[in-house]
Amino acid sequence: MFSASDVKNLRDKTGAGMMDCKKALQESNGNMDDAITWLREKGISKATKKAERIAAEGLTEAESVDNSAVILEVNSETDFVAKNEEFKNFVAKLSKTLIDKDVKTIEEANELTLADSNETIKEAIINLTAKIGEKISFRRFEIVKKEDNQVFGIYSHMGGKITSLVVLEGANKDIAKDVAMHAAAMNPQYLNESEVPSEVLEKEKSIMREQLLNEGKPEDRIEQIMQGKVKKFYEEVCLENQIFIKAENKETVGKFVQDNGGKILKMIRYEVGEKKEKRNENFTKEVKNQIQK
Image (cartoon, rainbow, N blue to C red; front, side):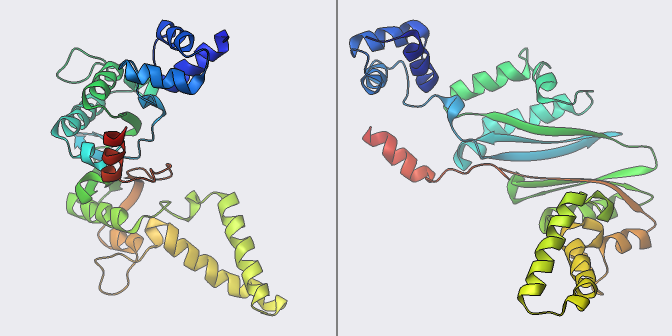
């Protein structure tokens, strides 16, 4: 009537226990859809287990203490939950936990005890997911150290939707914060030209070359024209090459920092849900769908 793989498949789809899945298949004569319905009717499972949902909302956060700083992103399924005080408190505790630790991966971080609790980070996420009813995902983080002659700059935009962290040498905190604000607003992909991967640059140059050929530009002038285009590309994607948003004379960020006696050593920018699949339905429609089930 049904096989062990059917039981496993049902468990993967619903997150219900193995014996419950077996019972559901028995009651539904092996029909997968009927088994899912049976589990839902019994209150054992929802149609989709939380672990398979898309969590592309949430918060980013950064903070510094002495010579350590941390930037992180925690995701939820909806913006509604991202504004929940319990969710925001968890993000704050997570930041406090990580800031002075020597961990580099999510797996390592998950084993740490969450600040002001007896739970590991992993356990706290599981419990928060169960309590709130949405998938909570600790997506990424980076811990940064600085020397005594260096300063952190941190800027958070749109209530934590975008956060940037920079490290400057030889400049003051106000300059560092201005640079972090620029990074949050203008979305540079790289700190400077040397950080642009060669494959990325070559791909852009290939596109530029084809565009110029399609426009009928003479082949003997294409390389010369491309020099200007490459310069423009760097101005778009590199923090140091971008025109500083607070400058009145079209000064670049790199020149602004240099004129104030400093140098940018590092830039990290997190935006909630970037490069993640987004939900197609909005929260209101989701609630309506749930009510109709």
